[in-house]
Image 1 (spheres, rainbow, N blue to C red):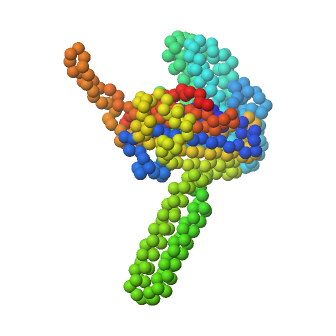
Image 2 (image 1 turned 45 degrees about the vertical axis):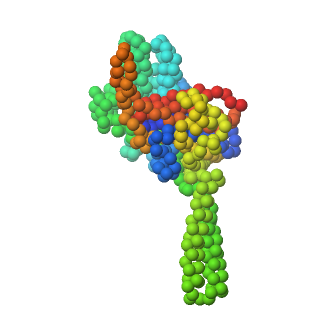
Image 3 (image 1 turned 90 degrees about the horizontal axis):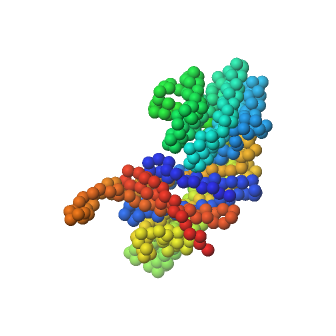
Length: 490
């Protein structure tokens, strides 16, 4: 099963998230996606101006484990849950402070607890906000109490580490985890408070949430985590430190990529054969004219020059033909996915090309034609079409082997498209236009926006799914992303 999500990552970047679930069902789990970007012709994005290297500079792919689903009570009390597992590791580290395996597991479980709690709180906040209801009783009393119990339990473990005979590195690791737990708690509670304020909930009703936020701010100050209490969201140093802390904690979920060019051996073999064929042609011409005119004659000299010129062109044309046809058989890059212990748990293949409209599949065409302004524009007004194909294969037996979490069974594929190059040829974001109103010509201003249409073709266990989005942007960046409802096609 595949779950998808799209969002605006920053001013010019669109982020796609695909979650590949139920990894352990098969011996090998393949996932294929094809993303089509339909770019207005006026933006000067074409095969000559937008090369393969530029495209891959604008695309970032992150592969990571998807944090397992727990509720707060399971996190705290479940025997195989992250808190009980960390508690066990803390005791092992205190008893064996020099054991590398115990230290490695201890660090991994601190990070895993932080990542899971963040995901759990995020899911809970999204669920509450999605209801759109102002009834604050939807946050049950047990929610805040259990969250406080998790924080209290973790801080008890921190105190045990600080009082034991472990080194400074071991102590710092659990302090990093402590700061992260406090930070994400404040963040998600603030998010809920802001939501309820928009729903016009009275401040008195929010006292438990506000008290929880205040407690965490005071705690971070007492531990020396936050330098400026008043600048809880705006202080530059504080935000930088939190960003570094987030990367450190969530590194337990991120996977490494070993990138290599796909089809290199075949490519070099073809080039060698091309050179050989060109040499055979050149030598055959030389032998023929040598026998006909003899050595050191003008016709033989001319024949040698012409054969050399043709040899060079034959070699170049054969190589060019291979490069043009290679996209049908090979991908641009073959990437090994490695866990933090450098075990290969899968691979990714990526391919980028421009495709003409007539070579698109019938369903992709129909989905793109839906809702167009010019109903009879069969050429889509000269749009350039970028095709980005990605194939992911996961090896279930090695998947998540280094993480002690028996609920881990899904992978998160994050792809970010930076569209800043697309904006270089755009007009000014504000344009003037004239109209006649009450017998007078009036000049007004309006927004000059462009539409980048995106269609995703996702191969799932149940068949092929299509998703379409309209990215509305101007020279200053992305304004919004609009999902486009598609018709069911047979």
